[in-house]
Length: 492
Image 1: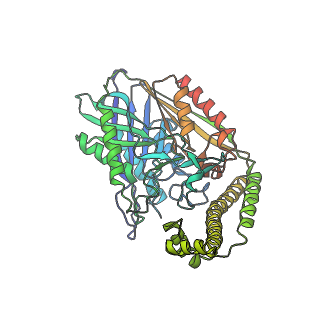
Image 2: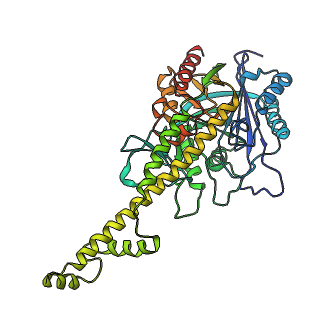
Image 3: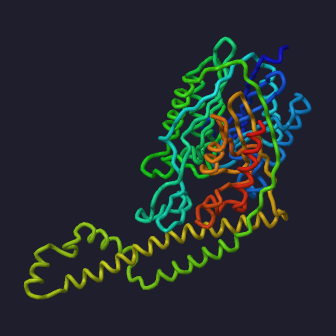
């Protein structure tokens, strides 16, 4: 076989929890793409799962895929298929249904390996092209910038901040990175699409679901036909959220979000030309990222803020039963809240100020009660942050290590580069990688080849955003990671 021949194969396996009591909205898949240019073989596996090997580091909160999954899968691929284990990229979509998502540990490896094996058996000559799509309607940065310089993250475990305290939004990356793979006769074989979107809750029932990227993949596959496969590659989505995440006025519906993402990917796909003279390369290196040491100071700062808010709750005369009717009355008519206007006019005419005095006391009590509500909302977030920081201090302490090992993998497919991180990389870091890259098309695949919670920019530390609170890494991690990513990109 000539070395100039480029080949590819695809296959998928159902990895969904197969217990009888599982409520399944749609199946979860391990999808495999094998590429071979005659010199180099590369395997890309995309999985509808929250994290790859996050069981221990999350204290079993992300329990489905254990730490042995990736090394076991790599060993089998290397020993049985003769592909170097370091040439395998495994990416988690980061879907978040409640409860157990997957089949058992042994079956996870068996079924995923089977998909890779079948993909190799189905190799065919292909052409590849790379391009981008655009989608800015379905996602936003979830960590609000406040006027006091702090951050407040939109989550279901705490309220949103008062509107008057919000100053703006952080960045997102609306780019859809697209790798188009056609059979030699021009018929589509596969589409790899890379997009940053935090797949939190699929529906209000808590069903097992691949979330809206599962819908998007289905839209793409049905549109292309020819048994083509769409593989979703999660991006730098650490602080990204779908815009309907906190919509309490209608049931959650992932169909519109997935349809829009799928159609936008197809729109970008139309512009991509494929070619056969595509070369492959892969580099995988391990770096040591420092664990943070500032958690005690961060907890102390939050406790001081907590104490101040608790003290501010004193001297409150109203309870909710008395507050609500007063609030409504004074909101309905700010000029004459207590009674009809003629009563106020009569008092003024006779020189009596009873209503004015009463209104002054009531308005003061209403304002105080509202301030206490805002204080309670802030206390809710602070208490959650303190508990989270204490948990992560425990994780770091129990590790007995000052650093966390992290794989950084770079894959070159023609004029495109994919660079990985095992952290939940935030949008700003992903944008930095793309900006620094000499390649026109650079795609960041976070949640890949491992898991270590969030990777927040160094400048975000001390601002109380959730992504820093939930981070095990010291702020220096960013410079180390970005430097290594840039080195690997230049070597490719």
